[in-house]
Image (cartoon, rainbow, N blue to C red):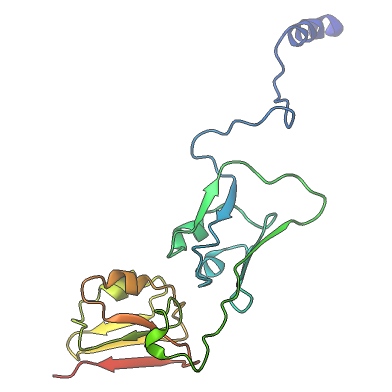
Length: 206
C-alpha cells in the first residue's frame, strides 16, 4: 500500500515542470531590490577608509599608500553599511552573486599613484588640491555648523559662542564632505597633508 501511495507523487513529478532553475546554463533573474555583491566606482573613490570602518565583518581593506581598495567576497555579508557610509557615493550593490570558487576570492581595485609636484614649479601654476588635510579660512567662515553636521566621522566641532572651529586630525578621513557642504562661502579647502595630528582649533577674530 505504501508503494501505491508513492506512485501518485512519482507520476505528478514526472509530468510537472522542474522546480529548480537550470543555472548556470540559464541566467538567473533576480527580484527587485535583491542584494548581490558590492561594486565600486574606483575613479571616484578618495580612499578615505570610511567603508572599511563601517564593515562589520572586516571584508573591506583600504590602502591609501598604494591607492588600493579590496573586498573579500566570502566575508561580505551584503549589509550595505559601506554603501550608506560612503561620503562620495561610489559604492553600490549590484544584483547577482560572485561565481562559486574553491578558494577565497578577493577583488582588488587600484588607482594610479599621482606623481608629486615638482619643487621648482610655481605654486600659482599648481592645480587646486583634491585631497589632503582640511583647512578653514576663518575670514570667510560664518560658523554655521553645516560642515560639522555633514562630517561622517564627527571630526568637526563648531562653537558659535567662542567663535571657534575645530577639527580632529586623527578622526578626519579627508573625504571632503565638509568642503562640499560649504558651497556658499568656500571657507574650507584642502591643504598639503604634513602629518599634523590631534585637535586643531581655528578662532575667528572679532
